[in-house]
Amino acid sequence: MPAIRVVQWATGAVGRHALQGVLSSPDYELAGVLVYDPDKIGVDAGLLVGLPRTGVTCTDDVERILATDADCVLHMPLPASYFGRDHASDLSTICSLLASGKNVITTTGFVYPKSYGRPTVEALEAACREGGTTLHGTGVNPGFMSDFLPLVLSGLSSRVDHIYVRESSDFRGHPSRQIVVDLVGFTRSAKDYTAAVRPYRAFQRALFAESALLVADALGVELDEVEESDDFELATDEFEIAAGLVRQGTVCASRWVFSGLVRGRPFMTIEVVYKADAEKVPRWPDPGFSIHLEGVPQVSVTVDEVSHGLAAAAAHAVNAIPAVCAAPPGIATLLDLPLPIARGRARLA
Image 1 (cartoon, helix red, strand yellow):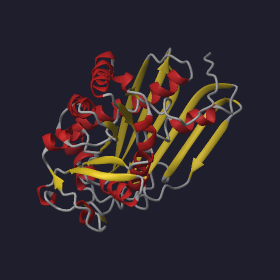
Image 2 (image 1 turned 45 degrees about the horizontal axis):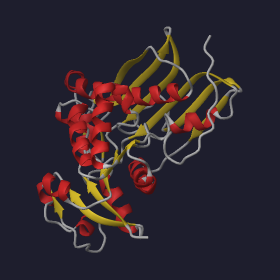
Image 3 (image 1 turned 30 degrees about the horizontal axis):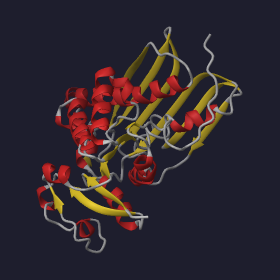
């Protein structure tokens, strides 16, 4: 069987790990690499990630990538909200890739495009028909912890009343200043954070609304809305993290809560805690993931540690390549790929 030809789109914090995964597998052949950093243009893809030369050089030429013969694109840029734009910008790029005849696996959302409304779904479906291709959105959370795992666990329940998912992540070793400072907002003053986080808040709400809606739909529940609230913590001391210096009095942690409501009551609650350094921020839970299903019976699972979340997100995307390439044209959520899920039954009071 010939190797699957893969394009790596963006080589940032997650993309570098994905590129390493593609180059390390005999099942894949690297077809191209799209980069944003001018210093990476013309660099051999292998050398970029500490591997032997590949003969494939990095480019910032989008048209060249669109014209490249490839089976799949690992689409892993910064989300459009980083640049002050909404998801329509990512949508346009993804549609162009799909229409060019390439399957797309993205980590910019689109885990459940239905949450963005019918126009978004129709645009994606039209691009898939034109290119004979498939779209799959993935990640660690969303993409696994807040959607796949709760649905798997629901297979142990005869009745599901409420689903609670909590992520607590430590950004101490995260290397990307663009993510940690510019997007998440750590190291900013409270005033600057409040102003700068607005586009990111919209992105976060849209992202986790996808998970809540996917889980609810899979369990036969119709949500009325997804409610969001957030808070932040200021550093009491100065400390260093991989992305820079966190000064006393600047933002060092944030907590987000997303609630999928039915008749004013939460059916699914997703709590997301980010800490610049978990050892320096005692407020809010320690790093890890927790999933609780209230119902019959009660089910709880705790993941104490994912030692390298960036590598996990990349691996989850790379591992999906064969299934996505083999899927029929269209939008492939985690419910559509060959990962059997025995789901439970929701029952609302």
